Image: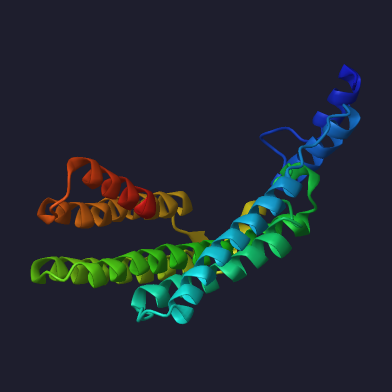
Length: 252
């Protein structure tokens, strides 16, 4: 454990209202070292979860495609299959960036244990993860929508699905473009943390919350589309309940 004199000698050179971000991190690192404070490190668990989720996702998508390709019945691969494959292909580089970029540069660890170069590298890799994530959301929704388009042939519902597809494409493109140019210059996204560079960014937190809110609203709307068709099915209420649960799990 550290003594009060050690703490005072460490903190005094860097008062909260005078020190820079880098000086603050250095002070925290020195203080934690003197006090034998064990830094947190969850990088191993995050690495395992990241790889496991991608392996499971890839396995299910490949099984779906192989079943359609090898099935003796005439089951054609449709746009919904192509979009789920695109979602997987977008997720693969995301997994690699997380595994080779974010985790080695501090994901799951206390920031004060990292070098300044690692903090900058982390923000740079996170920039790409954000872009890929926004693209993945839109592609995954398109897969569901084209699946609905295939199983619900009614003219009215087809128009609703097409409008939803158009909205989803515009929403996805808009957020990807907004994420690319959220800082000017773009490099300010991963250099703003140290307070030593000049530039301007939009409210990054607001961008994330706006994307999440619209995404949830679209998910609820997409859930309402198949549920609205259940009233036309001649099924018992128990079977309808099963179909509702199936669509809820698939959409959410």
